[in-house]
Length: 191
Image: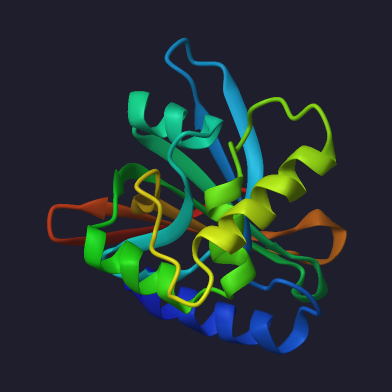
């Protein structure tokens, strides 16, 4: 097989059946302008040959790092399946239509939370955040909640995708796909 997206779809479908919570959770690793790394969990909200999509507040740390250094690594770890997938690639923002469509699909409280949060900035008390949430709720009472101008998504366009399968005695299987011109080159890595 030389199409990593078909293999991803197969593994992801199995994870959705076996993982109890958040089978779409992935670790996102970024680095700032000085190369200092940072990692956190985000949720995959779309994927395909054009890349892997997640959404966030563009005024937070992760977005700031991605806008300065537009490269990232993703890691899916499905412990129940004893598998993981590593993805590395360039990053760019999704278009406004995609961000609007996804934002409209979120729960109203999640939409209001996007207006209330100054993501990654210090918060003196939880009460302040909840008051801001209530202010947003009153502001948009009786109508739809529009997507905030500072909220959108990123797409990681993979250059490398590694599929790792646990095997007995640490004799793991590692399949590596690397983008080359219009296709993918597949190989194996030692465990």
